[in-house]
Length: 375
Image (cartoon, rainbow, N blue to C red; front, side, top):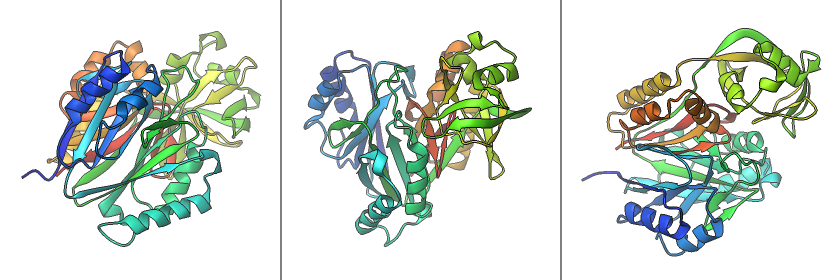
């Protein structure tokens, strides 16, 4: 008897009700613990909410996306999902709302609620637990939320992604209890005796080019000065381009990197502003020393990561992944979307393209983070 039953679903139907109906049929199974849905922001979300009423007999969580990903490859404008059923898996989804008032006291209160629901012990135990965070991708609060959760949950492994809206940067949503919500996050604690591996991967190496942040507004993630000069001008000079040439593809090809605890993490630029400042996908403080990153082969890097996970977890039945939208843009720019899709065919993968990623207590960019779950 299988200790973990996983069903995956994909629908590209343009009609929300039809798409949810297709996904529901594919995900249906006995004694489901949880359904996770990644939904294109192109849908009428009220219609999706209506279609979800009564569709599943278990908790349903999810978020809007900047694209959807499965073992069948990269799609856009659809719905992907997964249902999990196991006698060895207990899930505890919690809504965090409003997000902008979530601090240490609220984190401790949430942790207390979760402790009261634990089934495999009386306190948090990293070897038997992991958590998934789905968060409003335009809240600009990911750093605060993930750091608070990491502390409150006593270091339980955490991964997650920031909800997207197909690069319109208008409004992003998380899904909880049948409703799509902004200024909110959903954190789900998983308790299990099943084997799992939390992972992250990015395909950049630091160069010798340094950028010192000399003027920024952390709250708005805006940098006005780098190396004492106008931010966009200094960044363009560092990568050998003119300001007029800066666009999302360039930002994807030349991100900046920050060294934390001996390891480099990617910090990506979202856009150039009319005043010559730069808006980032993450918070940037004055005095930070950043390094321009140089890309390695993305598809080969992805293949290596998946091969390592198969080796570490021979009984792997699912990879749940949160993959930065800038990685998808790079694949599109280089004509590698199909090649990456071929690599994903070797594993049972469900995920989405994000506006940012979380791993343990850190908010990152241009990274694939996720969980590999076995039996």
